[in-house]
Image (cartoon, rainbow, N blue to C red; front, side):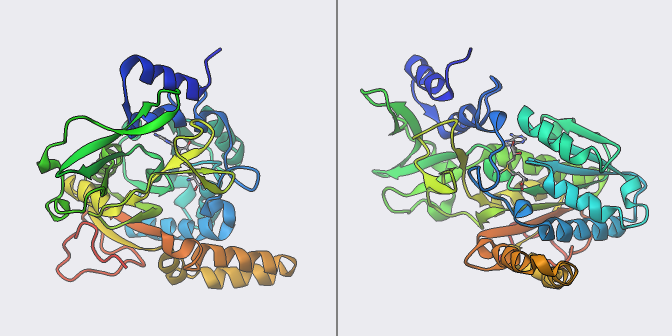
Length: 375
Ligand SMILES: C[S@@+](CC[C@H](N)C(=O)[O-])C[C@H]1O[C@@H](n2cnc3c(N)ncnc32)[C@H](O)[C@@H]1O
């Protein structure tokens, strides 16, 4: 039997020296040996560690599903379209999208579902949720094995789970933040001995105060580049929903969530979710460099409200007066600025032939502005 994740991380550092946050996240969340955080559990809901928007209410997935149906029509109703979701969790969002798709003549028949998921436990959960709803469902380890063709991609809280790196400004240089072992064998922060090249630091941040932290996420950018290249080549669009900001900016957003509370990210590897905030400017730059157009980010509140979530909630409350209080609370959770409404942002990537997707504001001149029109 494998040693627990924390023991394997300590053994690796003892053998090879300090590791970067990116390797730490890979080892803690799922390193292929079968017992990383996502590989072993269903972390969602009251008994888990966190709750995501689709798990709060069907309202979220229904609005996203209606958006997908609209965009399929904007794409010219292709007779074959990939409905792609990286990081689909329990499959709840895709189930709500498929229920809406069924109401739009021709849409469900045109769609094949492609889920990008590394966790065997969650794949099984997705299979249970989705098998009754769609004929063709395919699983992938990564975006790279998606078949050719136009796609509609939806990623809710996927990019935040991909590994990041940090560098810290110290004594005039920038040094990678790494994880080492204390003399007592506990995980601790350390800085790499040699600075990174100054050219790796965005010019606007080079004068940051001592101690400032800059985050980069090459894997996220690679995923955005891959999505952008596919959209430019085959057509379609991608909706990205996550907590994040419009960079470049400094700040330490690396975080652990356990039982719905923030925890020390080094305290319990393999037993807590590890994420960080997404730099939407970096994603947009990667996708536009690959030929796509980028829109937003706008707040989750703006996205859902402008697409009619309050009206949909009222309809549901009329149909289920016994659930009215619950629906009202869920709506508030999704759109209130002090809950998920402002923290979460929504961005869109499109093939260059598509105009502004609703409800993103059109741009004069029609040019893509990486990370532009942030609210
Ligand atoms: C925070 S959950 C989001 C789940 C879902 N989208 C939702 O909104 O409920 C992150 C998801 O990404 C998956 N995941 C994490 N790293 C991944 C990777 N490198 N490739 C594919 N899926 C990954 C996890 O297994 C999980 O399904």
